[in-house]
Image (cartoon, rainbow, N blue to C red; front, side, top):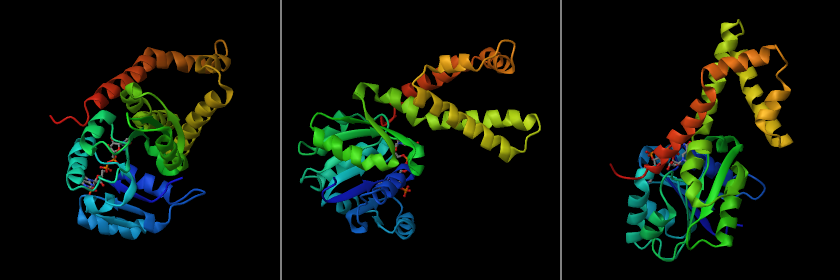
Length: 274
Ligand SMILES: NC(=O)c1ccc[n+]([C@@H]2O[C@H](COP(=O)([O-])OP(=O)(O)OC[C@H]3O[C@@H](n4cnc5c(N)ncnc54)[C@H](OP(=O)(O)O)[C@@H]3O)[C@@H](O)[C@H]2O)c1
């Protein structure tokens, strides 16, 4: 599906996961077809050895003959770095630009990369590192169906891909982008409860993790509303409803919903210089 070379600007946490996805799956990109960049030269050397692909610090050289440029820089660096490579003429051949930066809109990227480059925006999450991510995609003004198809093929080895309108992207960032961290907090808190009641820590973490995983899979597999599944397991005068009332006393629903709201509002401000 990908015709030509891929450059990844910013091989950090997410860039590394994407690179790994490109080099695995049923149709892996050959080693010589991927180039990455970072800021720090020592880190570039380490990554080249570890990932067995060329990682350097030369953004212009990396994108010059790439047909796809994946931008996984911190939001604050995106427009500046793309502006530098565009000014050097390295985007004149019109590669597809795929940005995963939170809060940076396609029109901001289109304005800096010039009229030849189609732009796709993606919002992945960290479970991409184990192929269990969720990746939401949207196309900018110049992106056609074929460009979104390329983006799907890049991210599919990393998890489930879906398309949404760009107006939802800050919300997606607050929900599925930040959400894994909210999940880790829930796993830790449930495990603390188990430890408090005498379970060894490792057993408590395993039980908590598998329980949340199973509950999420029940929602997806049955298509049932989570409230209906909850009602099914709450016996009158039973222990589950007792636990649920304790959660309600702690305002767990509004706390989680507000966490998404706050993270989404914060995402809207990313990429803007202060
Ligand atoms: N992490 C998440 O959960 C998540 C989820 C969804 C979306 N995102 C988005 O993904 C993007 C990357 O996040 P991350 O967590 O992967 O960040 P990260 O680990 O800090 O990676 C950023 C990378 O950019 C490199 N870099 C900095 N300046 C550069 C330059 N001028 N030229 C080339 N490379 C440069 C850094 O290099 P050095 O290592 O040498 O400093 C680093 O490798 C962000 O825009 C974020 O919004 C992240």
